[in-house]
Image (tube, rainbow, N blue to C red; front, side):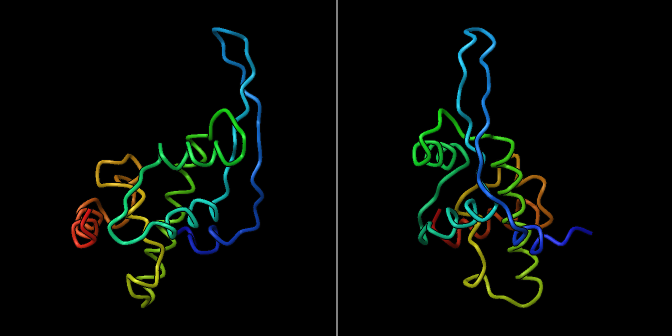
Length: 131
């Protein structure tokens, strides 16, 4: 069993990598966010405010002067944030005390389909949140 809370709290630094576009040979700067950054993004979404991975990646790229944000890293960290929140909830934390990951994804998101809570839980929380 993965300890998602420990994984979320593991020391990590954001980074960059270069990617070469095969068609043009042009180098592109790819931003690599941390799990904490993804969690902060989700926590900043107010009740009734929704977002998705595409908007999150665009914001990170813009804020860090990158051509794009790594989609794989972002989705892995979004899963970490969600599972850590679910662990905290299972340990007794109220929904108002955990990261509202359901505002950063909907039940059709590929990450949502991999979460231990199931997509119905996300759909219910989104409906309760007016999303």
